[in-house]
Each structure stands twice: as structure tokens, then as C-alpha cells.
Image 1 (tube, rainbow, N blue to C red):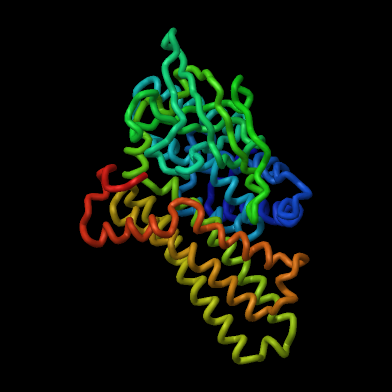
Image 2: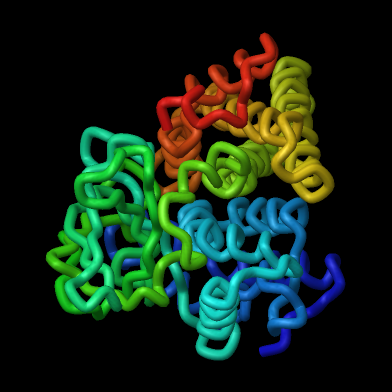
Length: 394
């Protein structure tokens, strides 16, 4: 499928795909489906190649527009939007290098990944989180070493929360060198069917079951040197500190969409009854919800656009953290307002609001967490060197 090139057409495609995904959300949340159907729909819609440059067969989407795509998907199926973002955490960081000449090995890696996505519709996912360490790169226990023939890497370790488990074709695994500094972390592309790769039972969580999240074990998994991310060891933390948007900002679009869904449900519930719609107290509540949502949307969109114009700048990175913090606050706030306006009948298990409120609360769990966002903004305010990896506990 050839993706449209005009932004309005891409957003229309996102809305249409989201409408197809919407009926699946409740079934997955209730445990009656594993959520993989959503990602089949995403594949068939051609969305996996949104961020890949046009010259490589993708849509060449900017980060700001990608944020808006996630918002549209999140309005209709929050878990699917988050799972889709995990694919783009991997692809987006690579797409950022488009147009930049790279060493031959890195060029070959980039071309291979782009071709896997565009020509074969392969889905990628990120495997970083570990028990007791979360998604922080520093302090990671998963290790790698060169094989005796020095043509392969051997990975060992366990990941605790890997989204798209069983749904993706490849997983980009973060690991540190055996015996090396814990801050020198590299990423490797591991295929789902590589010997030594296994997944535990998919976690049954309070929300976001559609992300198909499970533990991952790597038992002497051997991958060729060509699958070292961009063919450079020890660069992961360096990259994250300077350009944290792929680890953080993708979540803001999806969670903004969930907040929008809460607001839309509340408005629909109110307007279904003329008596409620004419109540000045309820109108006041809806006005407050609208103002909060509009402020969050403006911040998220501005952060996305600033990444496009000033990627890696202190201001762009600060905006990313501000947007993530605000969205993590606004979703639950709108949920509380919705309960007050709609009453207990609207939050029964039969209505989507109950699920949306649970989903919104998970924003504070995803990186960067609220205290990390505030730390970043506070350090920026007092002039701390935010390009020094030693500044953070990541």
C-alpha cells in the first residue's frame, strides 16, 4: 500500500484506522482478545512506514504530525496507539538520521530496517525495562559479549515489560557489555524467532492490556554484528540524553487522545439530556474540562513541532518533558470531572468511561515519569548542563 503524502490525508487515514480499531478496545480490556488483531489492522493500513523517509518508501512524517496521528488513534483505542508507538520508538530514532551520511555499516543497517518495514511490513518493538530498574539505561543487568569468531554478539538477560510481545517481528534490546560500565549501553535487533528468545505469559494489567506486554528472556541469544543498532556500541545513553523525545514524547500524543476521549464521552453524555445540558453547573464543569484539554493539546502540539524545528535543543527537550508531565496530570483530572458530571451509571463496566479513566492513570507510569519530568524542567531552569549524561540517573 502506498501511503498518502499530504498531511491532511495522513490524518484522515489515522482517523479511519482508529475507527476500525475502536470496537476492539473493550474486548481486549475484558481479556476476551489478545489485542494482536489491532496490529494486523495497523500493518494493513500501511502505518508502520509513517516515519520512514519518502525516498525509502515511507511517508516521511514529521514528529509534530506523528504526535497528531497518535492523538487520533488514542481517541479511539488508547492501548493500540501506545503499542504502535513502541514500534516507532525504534523506527523514529532511525528516521531522524535520514539524509545524514553514515559509515557503511550504519548505512547498511538503516537500509535493512527501512526495507523490512516498507517491503515486508515487519513490526519492531523496544525491549528495555527490567525488574527493579524500570526503563533506565544506567544499571541495566542484561549483557552482551562478542562471540569467539567475533562475527556475532551473544545476549543474556531478562526484560520485565516488553510491549508487543508475540505481535512484533523484531525487538530492539538494550544491554551493557559484560564487565563494562553500566552506563555504556548498546541496542541490538533480536528477531522473535531467534533461538534463545522466549516470552512469559502476557501480563493481565489494570489497563492497557492491548499493548500485549510480557516478560522476555534472552538465553545466549546470538545475533550477527549487522544487527547492532547503527553499528555503534555504547551510544544509547548519549543519544537519550541529547534527544529524549522518542523515549518520552510519543506517549504524550497517545495519552492526549485518551484525555480527548474522556472529554468527548462526557459531552455526549451531557448533551443526550436537554435538562443536563442546560444546567449551568454542568456547563461550568464542561468548560473547565475544555480549558484543561485545550491547554494540554496546545502544549503537546507545540512540543512536537519544536522537535521538528529544534531537535535536541534544551528548549525542545524541556517542552517534551513539560508536555509529558501536563498530559499525565490532565487525563486523571478529566476523569475525576467526568465521574462528577456523569455519575456512577456512566462508569459501569458497560461504558467506555471506566476503561478510559484507568488508561489515563497509566500515563504517570510511562517514561518519563512525572518526577523525572519535573527534575528535567527544574535543572533547565537553574542552568544545569543537560547534555551531560552524568546529570541524570538514566
